Length: 288
Image (tube, one colour):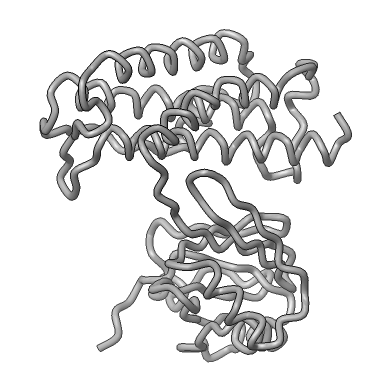
């Protein structure tokens, strides 16, 4: 029997038949099921183990959607970047071209990730991403460079300009910065335990970005003190890693995995870089 509630992505579409033809015919996604009214469809996302739900604009939640979607699904809006992890972005690109995909496929490679950007007919962009595996030296360079990248991303912006955003319901530059720093502080807690007590079992509450955004008033708060805190935090961790032998190989254990300090720093560096790229997109959009 087919498992239920697997779809992690909800895409709102204007024309169901055209969208099914696009995602199925152009992108190679497999149509698994449709609802009786023809206003929703469940598809397997090609090159992954994930599923997505297409739903016509204005269609309300119902039993079928609840049966298809995971409880923590994400809903993409027009203008959104939708991230899809794959083993090889080169294979994805080859498959798209073999299917006759005509639109330009954007590419973006960083030290920790390789991406291919695929525009859709529904206004969002699919970002197929492949994880890369830099050396310890490269990870430390990425992590250290994040301080300057943050400073450059906000340099010269007025307080009002920090409130600029790509689209109405997306985060502003201010909100991106505050989110980055909060995740940094949470992750640093794990890093410190790994460095001090390698192999220790670590337990902690899950981090829900939207809850922190609301609870800590990201939309209105100043960022100056937090930017200084980000710089001091990274300098502190860099100093520890330079001083302690085999620092990046030390580990922390959670209920379902073991993580090295190298993996944690790589995640933190990549996460900050991702949000600083968003800040630059906003700046370019508004010419500031």
